[in-house]
Image (tube, rainbow, N blue to C red; front, side):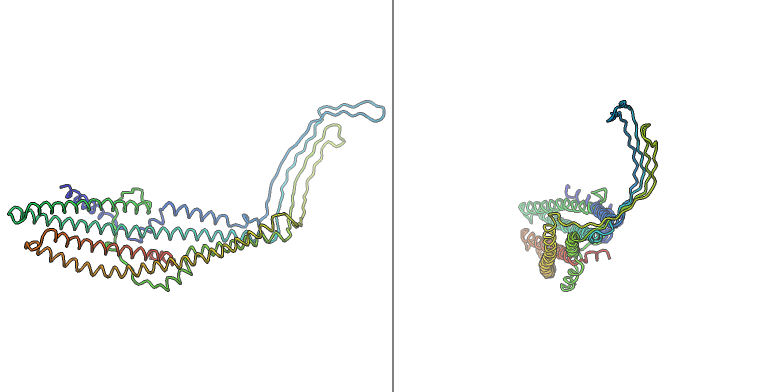
Length: 439
């Protein structure tokens, strides 16, 4: 009865799911790309890199400052003449100064450092786009893997439900034969044990399917993690038409990690160029326009003075020695060499990864073909065993073995399909073609 209640619950859930629009892999990815929080953070970081890539941030534009100030002082003075005469005392002498001005400062030339800095910022902007692409490709690979895992778990649940139905049918036959004395109590107990074992396995699989559903909802940023999901696909469709040469050529041309390594190399070379720019002179321009008001106390011959005018100047300089330049040049050269070595190392790692994945992909396809043949034989074997069991020419243990062989064959083919699909997803991700799932 308990098993039947679980089966009824699962069927009820299935009917509830049928009432909603089913998800395809494409719609799952589109939903996740729009809502996933991690991707939204990465896009914001990309926007920050884009905001930073300006001429002003690189120092190419002048700075303009408006300043205003006031100062004053109050003094007590005592004047003693060198010759005879009265000593003069003055207390509370006040003098004030008011100034308002606008100042312009502009570095016209800085040994190509400013231009190089702008190039670095633009390269960082491109790298921000690349990092977003890497995050999106990783996300699509994760979501695709979980999508097909969900399908795998649904198929497995159906297989276990089928096993329960087979065990239930066997139990029914044994109970009927036991009543008329054709089967012993031992046969009845063994049939009931097998039925309960299959029922427990089915209930356990429901938990696994539930976990996969939660993970899928989490990746799509669905608020209700336990939200029932209906998917369009009912089988794991494996692409067996991939070509290694095309995948490797695409990897060298479009792999996002390799593209980022190339950008790192460019930035390292620009950093080296920026250090070398300190060997050149610099030219700076400054100009200003302001108003100054000075007020004096009674002892001064001038009571008030106003100044209104402009000032300007140009500075040419050259840094002869600062004690760090040689060290910075050596380190910048090493950094550039490391960036180039890193790029080569990534190419080598990608070659190893794609070779391993390709071998696993081809092997899994061969295993899949073999298991499909085994499944056909296992189904025929079970049907024959079942007929012999009904006729009383086969023991319950032998029927159970035939049933187990059928379920094992279904499990192996399901595992082979999923493993092949994972290899396919990884190969498409490495080659930069993972977004084909959006087509």
